[in-house]
Structure formats: C-alpha cells, structure tokens
Length: 342
Ligand SMILES: NC(=O)c1ccc[n+]([C@@H]2O[C@H](COP(=O)([O-])OP(=O)(O)OC[C@H]3O[C@@H](n4cnc5c(N)ncnc54)[C@H](O)[C@@H]3O)[C@@H](O)[C@H]2O)c1
Image 1 (cartoon, protein in one colour):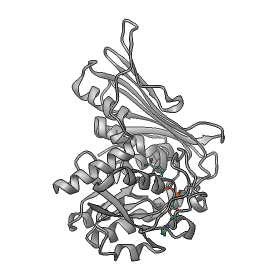
Image 2 (cartoon, rainbow, N blue to C red):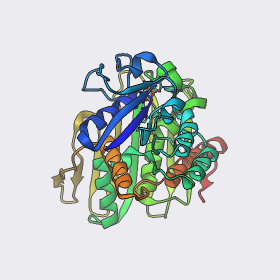
Image 3 (cartoon, helix red, strand yellow):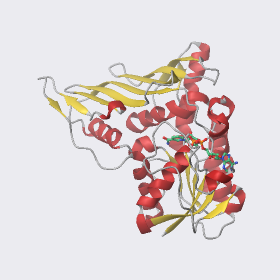
Image 4 (spheres, rainbow, N blue to C red):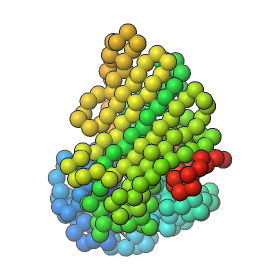
C-alpha cells in the first residue's frame, strides 16, 4: 500500500483526498499538512472551488498524522509518496525537497511559475530515486482521452480544426486569495489555460509558432487569453481561456473538433455528453471511460510507481513545455508578434 503525504488541504487537496479514499487498500493518506489548523484537522467548511464537493465539508482524520509545516511531513519516514496541492508559487520548492527526501512526487499543475524553476525540478528529479509527475488531469479526462484517440487513429479522417475552451468566473475561493495575485499563481494563463496548452501538446505536439491576445480586466493579472497555434496550413488550432466572467457564470471546459468526416463537440457545463455529428446529420454519443481525470491521473501515477516505470502519459518535461508555451503566448500578446516555438 502506498502511504501518501498530502500537502495542502484546499480545493484540490480535498479533491485528491477524496480520490485516495476511493482507492481502498492501494493507497492511503497517512499524513496531511496545511498551514491552517482547521484544514489540516479535517474542517473543510471554508474550502471553496469551482467544482462542488459531494462528500461534505468535514472529515474524521483520526489516525492521519497532521503537520503544520511541510518540511516536517517530508521527514516522516512512513510517507512514501507526496501529493503537492499547495499554491503554485510553492510547487518547485516543495517538489524538489520531496524528491531529495526520496519520496515519489505528484505535484499539481502548473509545474512552476517559470521555465527556469521547471528546469531545476527536472534536474533534481533526474538525480532522485522517486517517480515524478505533474498532475495534468486533462490528459486523463475521459472525453479528452477519447478525442486524442480519434485524432491518432484517424477514425474520422484528418483533424482540420480544433477549438479548446476553458471558461470561468473570477475565482474568489482560494485561501488568502493567492490565486488572484499573478506573482503567486501566474494568473489565468498559468492557472487555468495551461490545462489546454498541455492538452494541445499531448494531442498534437509542439506547434511551429503561437500568437495570442490577452486581457487584464479583474486586477489579478491576465485573466483572458485567445491564442492561435500554427502546425500546418490546413489545421487551425484555437485555444481560449478566461476567468473574467461574473460570479453567476458556470465553469465550463470543452472543445469543438472538426475532422474530415465528423464534428465532435463537448462541453462540461450542463452535463451534456460528447457528441459526434456525421456529414449525413446523424449524431452519436459514444460511451466514455468511467471516472474523472483526477481519479485516473492518481491511478496512473500509482501504476508507474508499482511497475517501477517513469510516467510516460504525462512527463515532467512536457509539463515544462506547457509552461514555456503558455508564457510564449504572453510574449506574443505583449509584442503583437507571432512567437516561434523551439
Ligand atoms: N488540476 C486541477 O484541476 C486544479 C484545480 C484547482 C487547483 N489546482 C492547482 O492546485 C494548487 C492549489 O490550488 P487550490 O485551488 O487547491 O488552492 P486553495 O487555496 O483552495 O488551497 C491551497 C491550500 O494550501 C494551503 N497552504 C498554503 N501555503 C501553505 C504552506 N506553506 N504549507 C502548507 N499548506 C499551505 C492553504 O492553507 C490551502 O488550504 C494550485 O497550484 C492550483 O493551480 C489544480
């Protein structure tokens, strides 16, 4: 059984905790760290987020060791794997320390706030015995896995156009409002839009160049981006990410993929299934794999540890590339020029 030390019991830490509870004997949270006393003791009534917690806001953490400081959790010899769910500006520091302490490390996206820190993390991981993966949940999201398979096996012919979208109201739930400080979160581009940057990389590899336009409307850094990625002249790839909407606006992630012989549409909002429309007008709703990307990414990381294999579905180098390309979009927006991707 994998003994997990979870650092950060906020929105996504609570979500991961719920996933481990579903894993039965395969993995168990044995230690929990949060700087806030109520959160590390299982009172999650003040934890918010853009996806509701259906399991209630209080947990009995009897038997789970509680730490106020992450450095102390890393010294716990009965922790095999560390799951890092703290604000983004802490990812690099904690991940490197955990790897140096000999732990397996799953760390939330984005990998870090800049490419320099990502490269430092890669260097430490290369010298460390533990497995390392960034929790890029979209690579494991059933509809997104399905679309990548359709692109790869060309069941509908070539992909001709792709629109990835991630749309939200301005986040107000983070502890101390760190998320609206771009120096701590990277703003909407590194916090929200990076999911689609990473997914496009997963599906199509690196583009030749990107161009983008961004907006700052809410005072929390860039809170909207519209980008075009160039691969080849007969493929249009458009990515849209924003969190500048009013509070009542429901969170949505989705895509429209135009293939030679089909149009595939998915939007999370409203709970509608992914649809495939054929040129003759017929519509199919193919069955999806069970479970969401959060559960699936954790299961995959555990697979890798159990098989003693480095993660391949999502590599830390690709997560670094996602940060680099997201920042290239910002550069494009600032300069008004396309930015070549190496
Ligand atoms: N994969 C996803 O879909 C997804 C969704 C949300 C957030 N995230 C990522 O997860 C990370 C956390 O985001 P969140 O929404 O859970 O934020 P949050 O503010 O809800 O939770 C962060 C938690 O970390 C704790 N914390 C802060 N500093 C700490 C420290 N020094 N030591 C111990 N605990 C500390 C806070 O008290 C809080 O409980 C971010 O990097 C974010 O980008 C990913």
